[in-house]
Amino acid sequence: MRSSALRLLLLLLAGLAPAPGLAQPFPSRPITIVVPEAPGGQSDRLARILAPELSKLWGQPVNVENDPAEGGRSAAWRVSRSSWDAYTLLLATTAILDDPKRHQFAPVATVATSPLVLLANARSKVAGVAGLVKIARARPGKHAYGALDAPLAIGLAGEHFKAVAGVDLRRVSFDSADALIAALASGKIDVAFLPLGEALAPLASGKAKALAVTGAARAHALPKVPTVAESGFPAFEAVGWQGLMLPIATPKPLVAIHNADANKVLEMTGVREKILALGAEPGGGSSGRLFDLMRMDREPRRKPGQPPAERK
Image (cartoon, rainbow, N blue to C red; front, side):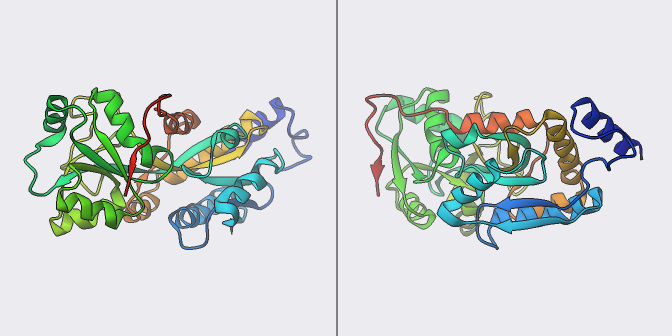
């Protein structure tokens, strides 16, 4: 009752609700989470982890609708043009919010993050991030790192590392994790940045060893592996993410309600366990945290005149 009264007060102050007794506080009807991918993908599974718990919290149905058309951009377009009343959310991913689209949304809450793992050949003598930096500085441009030909944080982690560590490593892009792992195992590249979910298999099989993870905290799946930040570069973080978004015109009180309730759900033990089982790290925190992740996706960019990466 206290929570409902507080919500109604917030909405009244924002001019979004009639006087008490004339209308129910938000939410008073079903809510939809639009997922920019087909059923069965990680974002879809995350939405279906959240939906039943949000439904219980709100006392309203929470429907998950998949819209994978145009690589998920159809979903972004649809939600950005939906009503500002906060009944339609987007479960956004790193990949679908390019520069024009990200300004059409109000960040609500981070649902999950997926760090990358900095890998080396299992037989490599490189010991940790400090060892990599040492050999890279000794022979600028002579050592190569592998990265997936992927958007934003997943593809840019290596460039971010170069900028933060002050090293010159050649980038070699790969179309698949299998090709990247084969190049690392054969010695064609010295190190690689690979998403956590893709890195666990070569680590388990002994084809690679982990030097660090790129998240702000150690990964639950690799608790003994330090972060790049712990290894001497505290400014470094590079993660893929999934987050809840609302249209940019949504009033701040409604964004605040969604953020508070998403955090309640993300703090539930069962929800956290299910997210960890997907190979992701549970999210949460302020809407500003999600905004920061969106901003970091765009940094650093390739400088004018910098040659394009090699491709394999």
